[in-house]
Length: 455
Image (cartoon, rainbow, N blue to C red):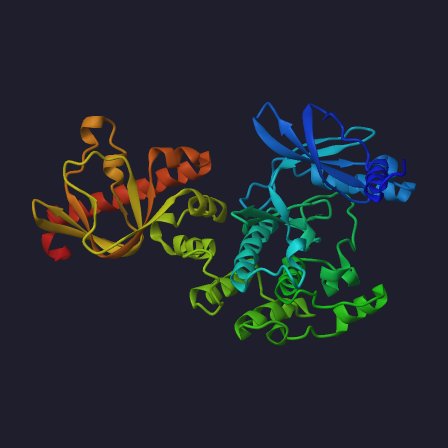
């Protein structure tokens, strides 16, 4: 009996695709996630930590010559040196590296979804709102990476993992630090690496690099996500290199409907040939993007009422969080409960057990004792924390009414919320509580001994 075309095709595919390994080291393998010229990525299970992981395994048998094997070993060593070092919500965590003599592998955080390469086609483009949000998060993450002494050098859509939720892109994580330039190491490192389409002019020239090289690459990625095509494109490598060093990218305003001139200006500035013409640092680049959002210059797609970037910038402006770093602020953005309260709503009533506390992000609340207003608290202050922190259940009872005086947004916390934070973030909360307590004790002292001073 003659075989159907589909049967023949499936047999050919099976012959080309190697069999799925049962285990890699101590990790049972679930499926194959992808593969490249020299490596393959598997979904596996880490039974010890009860989590799914992605395993990136180098196929040394596939390397055609000793030079390719040499560079592969260098890239593996560069990434392996970062195990446990990068801890940021928008950077893929590297859990382990095993330098097996035949097939070394890395154990990475598993991010369900795809890469941003999927959203670079004209028929799959993301909304402008989403692109600005993702660009902001990548800028903040790359700023963190640079403060650790690293320049990624290969920022491209394939190295940006999109976390998908409800059918839409919810978050992004930067991966693949095999090409990273470590500014703090004495080891010899490979230069002129990266993906040509997104490579800065100074990378092509072999010049010394700083954070602005990655800034150019991120801007090139954003350009591709917005326009459905990269800023420069050519059939031959030499022609593409000439464009990167000499040509100006076309305005995004003419390539896609709805692109505000402010967004085009930000991307074009970050794509400047001379790095001195780009943004001075990652904070400046991220601030430019967040200003677009704050001013509502980017068309809203109606995906979410408030973007993560808006919440991050708001937290950064509040006095309570003045001692928090970017990583800890992102934890608060993602794990705290954000609530809106109308005028007259009660956050607490006298006699109510205390099981939470609030940080006022916007608006204000009045504090009443026996019908008399004794205080008004505005943005950046906390309320309910003294009852929350009380050492015994008998003391965890509110002694006043706390009522919204002006429509308020609060960031609220419960014991369950606090348990989900890292030890570093919990320590910063403790320090913030101490600052609040000292201020309130000082105010009470002033009111008692110098009543006229506070009138």
